[in-house]
Image (cartoon, rainbow, N blue to C red; front, side, top):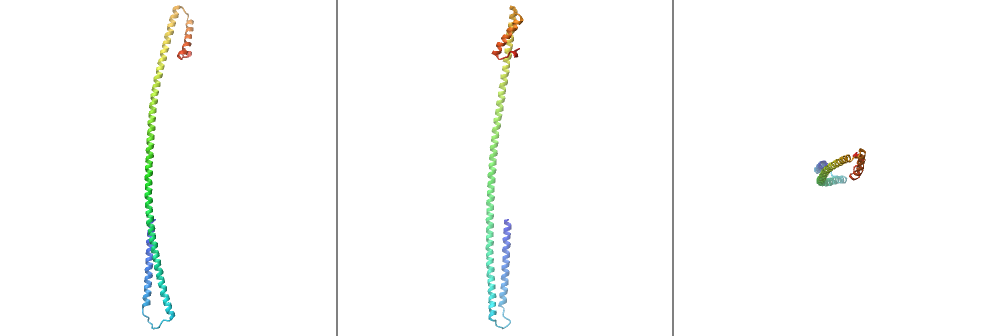
Length: 203
C-alpha cells in the first residue's frame, strides 16, 4: 500500500512539471511572436491596443495561476510524502509492539506449562506414595489375617485336644456317649461366647 502511494505521488508530480513546462514554452513562443516587428506600418487603434494589453494580461494571469497551482501541488506532494513517512513509522511501531506481545504470550505459555508440569509431578509423587502405603497396609492386613488364621487353628487344635481328654476321662469313669455329647454341646455353647465362634461353625 505504501509503495502505491509513493508511486502515485511521484507520477502526479511528473505530470504537473510537464504541464508547467508546456505552458512556459507556449507563453515564451507567444511573447516571441509579439516581439517581432510589424510587417505593416499601420498604427494600432486604441481598441487593438486594449485587446493586446488584455491578451497579455490574460496570459500573465494564466501563468500566475499555473505557477500557484504548481506550488500548491508541490505542497500536496510534500504533505503526501510526510504522511507516508508517518504511516511507515507507525507501522514499524505497531510491528515492534506485536513482537513484544508475542514474546510476552510465549513467556506466559512457558510459565503455565512449567506450572502444569510441576503440578503433574507432585500428583504423580503423591499417587506413588499412596500406592506404596496401600501396598504396605495390604501386606500388614495379610499378615494379620494369616496370624488370625493360625490362632484360630491353634484354638481348634486345643479344643479338640480338650474334647479328646474328656472323652478318655468319660470312658474311664463310665459315662455313655450321649453324656459325652451333652457335655460337648455345653462346652461349645460356653466357648462360642468367649472365643467368638458360633456353635454351628464349630460343629
